[in-house]
Image (tube, rainbow, N blue to C red):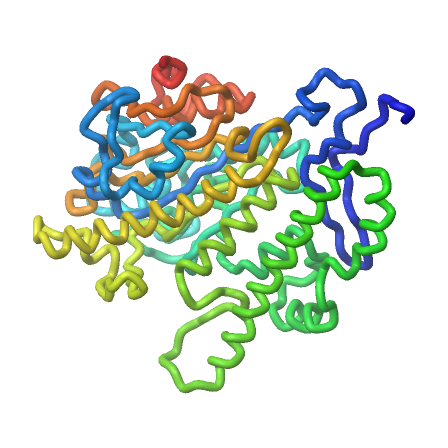
Length: 453
């Protein structure tokens, strides 16, 4: 066998008529005899932010012990299998979400400040103003190397226009991502639209046009078979296996989206209360979340983007979770006034959200990337910008940082000094992925505890 220093380019695409698929990280993308473990390409780091609204019941979330000897509280139990790849964080505050003389509107301020650290201007008009969010600071730097600078995903219909919370614009409530202080990033909730953005030609955003095209094109993969055939002879057995798994994953996502669309079409003829239901969105919260998590993982795997935000619901959400026996609205039960029955319902919703996030973490852990997994090469922050939903507090926020990206020691409960700005954490995360900045919101410096064992 002749060994050369040639390698398959990292940004290799499988192309066909109107379709282009980016490849996952393959061994063939590392030059022969390169100084990398098992000749695998050096992995890149990904940065993610997963948001849940309305706070989390503190006593069922925060571990009682600190350091490495902590036990998982009930709500966080779904994440217990990933103990070695996470840090539970407590004591951090986002006080830019406080009223500061502006009166009611904590839910709007929570969404607007979580990643910006900037108190938003109170307005329902077009003169909105917050700050550039941490994800977009990262996207400006890391996005130079990827097809998409960032992805903004969600599971609940959102509107950036009009008023949503006590004189605050819906823009503050319905996204956590701000490209500029006056430009909020809209959140995409339709898996079909995300899929076509990643893998289809996406020439039209019109739903009728997209459906007609998908009926004509039985599968994106049908258009790239010839490219796969040309590529495979030059791949080793492990790369061929990895490529097969990747293509199977794409086909599985297609199948699930198409199934959801068929169910929606069948339901369209049944008399039901008026409710907008975009094509491609599964009926259940759980199925919807799994599809979006799979798409996010695949976008990271193929290096289409290295930055993402993912809102499991918008701030102030009053969604009912009937699949777990909760017919009350989420926001409504968080105003529990210490009613044990309502608190129990909030705990069930909080646990469902944690289980939903755990599915994404499982997916990242099971996806090979370089000399490890996507989870090994990612930093994902999960949590809320409200601590106590009943009192609308913005201190001692419920947060967990997952992933091995940046070499942060894991397996700890880190309790920061009271009132430590959450923006210090965001500075540390940006620094770990190679995007150092000096200041964000009310930051006072990076969180040194992240690097301490």
